Image (cartoon, rainbow, N blue to C red; front, side):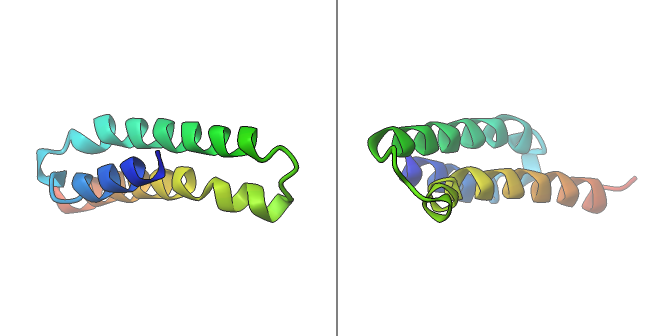
Length: 79
């Protein structure tokens, strides 16, 4: 799941000119990151706070990437 999340994040940047990819691939990558985080915590129930934050890495990067792409669209495509 982590690898798929990172690949979709990287795929969304070359396709940003379509202006719809952050709104489609963004939530998909956040969902996949959430699934990866949840599966990681199920397999390691006694993880520390830092371990839980490390497991949420993909979800946090996907969220930041989606926000950054929306910011790029709002600032670069002005009429």
